[in-house]
Structure formats: structure tokens, C-alpha cells
Amino acid sequence: MKIGLEVHVALQTNTKLFCRCRNDAAEVNTAICPTCMGFPGSKPVLNGSALSIALGIAKALNCKTREKVSFIRKVYFYPDLPKSYQITQLDEPMGYDGGVEYGKRKVGIRRVQLEEDPARIIREEEYTLIDFNRSGVPLVEIVTEPEIVDPEDLRSFLFELESILYYLGIDIEKELKIDLNISLGRNRVEVKNVTGIRNLVDAARHEMERQKALLDSGKDVVAETRSYNEGKGVTEESREKESDEEYGYIYDPDLTEYSLTGVEFAKPLMAGKIAHDYAERYGANEDTLRELLMFNRDALRLLEHAKDRRSMKSIINAISLLRKYNGMEMDEDSFDQMAMLLEKGGYVGEETVKKLLSGGSIDINVEEVKVEDLDREILELINKNEGLIEEYEKNPKTFNFIVGEMMKKHKLNPRYIAERLGKLLEERRK
Ligand SMILES: [Zn+2]
Image (cartoon, rainbow, N blue to C red; front, side, top):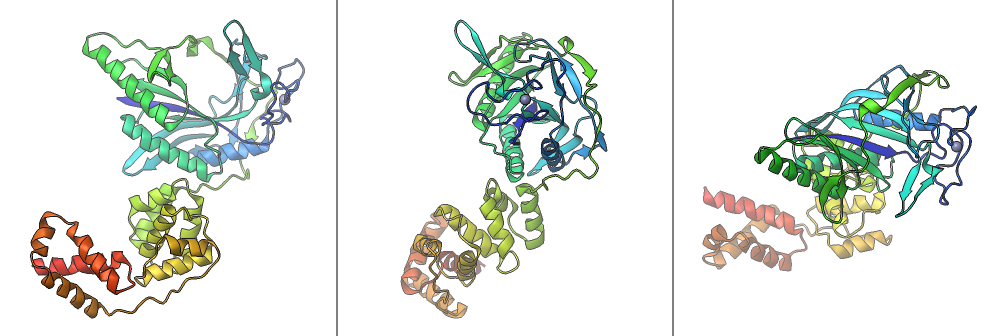
């Protein structure tokens, strides 16, 4: 199975891509002008901030970029396009030949291009309405290589991609429209305009099953465009049929070539890459770190702050606890106290987190228990409770009993007690 994606990211710039109309007008057909309505004689002027965001996306996806970019007119006739062409990029996209790594997988990025969105079509039973507010809104199109192998792989890829966009400051809650190209056999089916990771994975899964059933019964899969019906969870034949042959392309004589030299762009910040670097440098668990950092700027903020002060283990532990008790917005100094307490083997529960969040400070003096004493007490407990070891072999939950007993005696972190207990049992076994 091969899945390739065309991802459309609407950029939240103040103004549209080639005119000064507002990008976020609420009332229909109020943010329009001769340029985005395609009146004769109007001239497009490129929005520099859209160019720089698009460049940031290309860089974040490890794409090669050119010194100069240009735009072309993609000509087709449709009600959403009053000037009968869409300004986009063809031979010289912003970025090309990139890739996204996630875990042990990598999917190539064929191209990242900047283009304008057509108007929004609202279909009613008997008529069709058009909202031109969306006409000319900047869009970045990301095209992957068809290297995603199954629906689960698709989920992982999308998770990574959304995390990258999130760290670039792109509001991924807003529409991220994705076209899926799926093929099991020779012919490729395109499922257009799916939004949301869950829908995308479901659409891919359904399409996989549908194509497999066709191929198994000796039939051919028709190369076509389909749409995803969210309510039914199936892909359906789409009314809108287009193919590449119907488009005409010409260079846009109104737009010159734009040099990318010196264009500033948002610096890519990637949870996956950061997790990888930290895992290498500090010996932390990459998967755990990646999970903590995805879609969480606070986790990154706290990690960056504490990385050279506290042990990576206590930092990860502290962030996990903050996530558990909804305390991610904690300030750096309080976080430091918490990580220090954990580092000393102290116990942090919901109360401690709440106290720190409300600006209070905590007692970071942990009861000092010598390791030898702790080990001796644990061994005493084991010896006192005959058959505990045998039971533990069958049911590791027996562990909790000893940890619980020890916590009655000392104000220690249960993880620390469990760690010592584990070591002692290990030694006994030898
Ligand atoms: Zn306009």
C-alpha cells in the first residue's frame, strides 16, 4: 500500500497573498477588492510575511530551497475562480526534496509551494453561494512522496507533521485540508479534502479495504477522485472530476521572480529532533520525551530551562506529573523546586503541584534515609512476609504492597523505593 499526501495549510497572515484585504473577515464577501475578485487591470503584490512563513515551513521539512522563486497561473474554469486562474508555483516551488523523520521512519517531501486559495463554495439544495473572502488567502501546499505504508503509519506521520507546524506557530486547529492519494494496485485513487487526523486515518483504512476487496475479486480499481463521508465512514464517488490535462499553465507576467536571499523565516523547532538530541546527549528515553514535547510549548520551555540544572530523569518525571495534574503552565522557579525534590528522591503528588501553581513554595528537604538503612528495612519486610518472593514471581503487583508499607514509614518517592526494591530482588535472584 502506498499513500501520498497533499496537505493544504492556510496561513494566518493579516492580509491575503496578493492584496491588502483582511485574511480573517467574519462576514461573507466583505474582505474583497479588485485584485482578489480578478477585475481587469488589477495587479497582484506579493505578501512578504506569507513568503517568509512558507520558507519557514520548507526549512522545517528539511527541504532544499532556491535562490529565487516565481509564480505561475494555473488556468481552469470554475465558479470559485473569477479571474479563471489560480496563482501558484510549478517548476520553482519554495522547497523541494525534503523529508520528515518520525521514529525510525522517514517520508520524503516532494515539494512545498505557496499559492492562493480560491473562493469558498457553499452548496445548497437548489443553488450555490460563493464567499470571496477566501479568494486569495495564502495557502502552503505540502506534497509528500507516496511513501506512507499503512493507516497506522499515516497517523504517526500526521502527528509529527502537525507537531512541526505547531512549533512554527501555525494554528493547526484551523483547517488543515488534506488530499490522500492511495493505491494498492496500479491505479491511484485520490480522496479529496479530508480534515482531522482521525478522519484521515479512517478514510485511508476504508479506502484500503475497498481497493483490496476489488483486487481480490479480480476487478480493477478505477483511477478517480473520491470524497470521504464522515458520517458513514466511507469514501464515495465525487461529483467534482478534474484531471491534470484540463489545466493550462502560463507564467504570471504581473509577478516577477522573488529572491529568497535574506528573507527571514521562523526557525524550525521540532519536538522529534529535540527528543532525539536530548536522548543522545543526556541518555533520556527518546519516545517518552517525544511524547511529552509534542504539541506542548510549555514542556519545551520547562525542559530548556532545567536541562543543565537537574537530572534529565527528574525533569521528565516532573513534566509527566505536571501533565497528569494539569499544571503545564507552571513557572520555571517552581518547576525547579519540584524537579529538585524529585531528584532527591522526594514525593510529589497533586497537592504539591497545586501548591506550587498557586505561587507557594514547598519543603524540599527530603527525609534523609541512607541507602543501606532503606535496603535493610525493605529486606526485613520481605523476610517478615513469607512467600512474598514466590508470589511476586507470579504477580508483580506484590511490589506495591512493600512500596506502600515503606511509604508509611518514610516520606520518600514511591518510584525511588520501587527502584531499590527491584535492585534487591535482582540481587537475591543471583
Ligand atoms: Zn483583495
